[in-house]
Image (cartoon, rainbow, N blue to C red; front, side):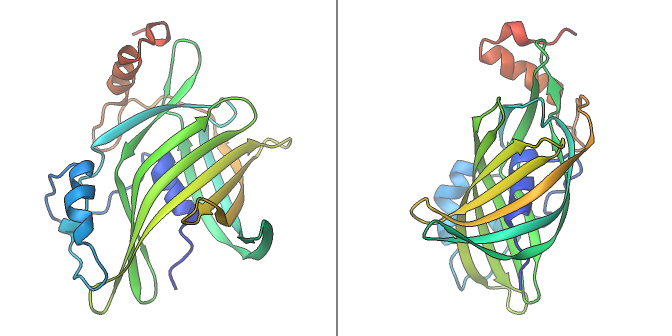
Length: 247
């Protein structure tokens, strides 16, 4: 069976940690995300033979978003509890090891606010006993940035293919909502809801997240992406000149 994807998707979509490695298929891809969704995605159907050339070019889009001060830094989770939601009622499905480290915040503005850059699309792969699942992060939207809660909406796509035949066996869009809430003991509660076709929550994952390290500025990612310049361009383009850090 393929392992639960809830928090893997969240990790890839929202935080884009500096240590994350993109899926490498050895195929040069040049189409943008918009072109890929319009022209390539419709050809990825059940029964089609998978090729890494079907993947979109990674990191063509960027989005800077503010990070609440209580969340900024390096975070760590160990165990996830999973629930099914039917008729507004939660049914506990079990807990499983879900170890991850998250980077929340890369740049600091002149007012002391923390910011993170999400790059889309991003691609990861999960291996099951008889299948491989490609998870493509397409977009995220941050609805609430300060106070005692942060809410993030995410959009992604899961494409499963058979190990034996290499053929696509399912294509599934995934919409989800994640809520972060600081706790009295200094930890954070992460609640990640997977949404059904009508926008209702059908599954919920919960994990207690601890802080491993405080925020520190990161100017470059391992692939050479210049976070410092990108952040300053973002602030200037949005008229936020008072937030520009001093050189």
